[in-house]
Image 1 (cartoon, rainbow, N blue to C red):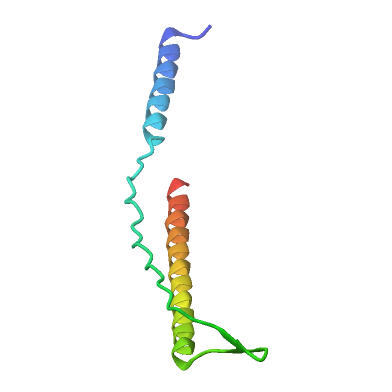
Image 2 (cartoon, one colour):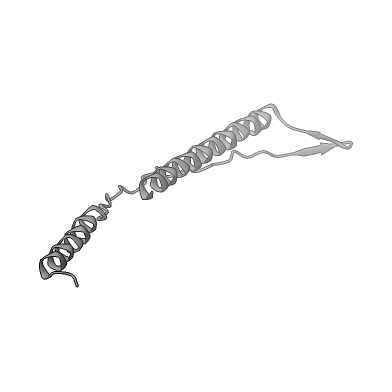
Length: 100
């Protein structure tokens, strides 16, 4: 038969063990700042009028320039979108590291 003193001592240490391990398992969640992404620039395409002469497609010099500028604007917009995707990727990659 187990003595009362040994029983209560064991019970005390078991309860103490639960209390101490319960305190260690608390998780503190930091509030994350929202991801701020600037508004995408609006694409304003310049007019390009294609003309067809004798089955050849022709452009005036100003329209060719407009076409080149439009292409550069589209290229810049795509680069902007890639940067936004990279920002989201880094934001959520850091989020998954803090959850573990």
